[in-house]
Image 1 (cartoon, rainbow, N blue to C red):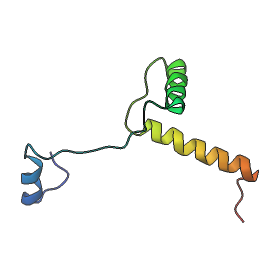
Image 2 (cartoon, rainbow, N blue to C red; image 1 turned 45 degrees about the vertical axis):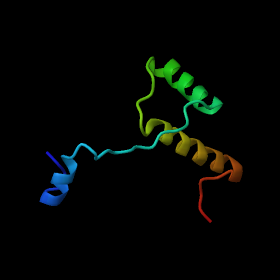
Image 3 (cartoon, rainbow, N blue to C red; image 1 turned 60 degrees about the vertical axis):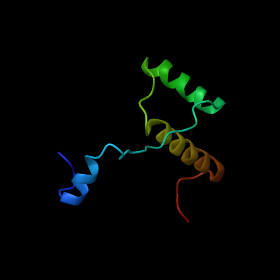
Image 4 (cartoon, helix red, strand yellow; image 1 turned 135 degrees about the vertical axis):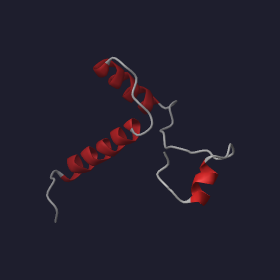
Length: 75
């Protein structure tokens, strides 16, 4: 079942040439390998992709910003 019911869109979705993409971090970097190793040590499996690595990055950016300003309060 397609999310879109328009005949034009469902016809396009049935074509062989249609493909989709999803975000994923660069997997060969030191930081990604550290993330993957930590995740595997904690959960005894590799992280699901996509999005798990992106959620980790977003959380770390937030944590670093909070640490830099020393607060979670807005101005």
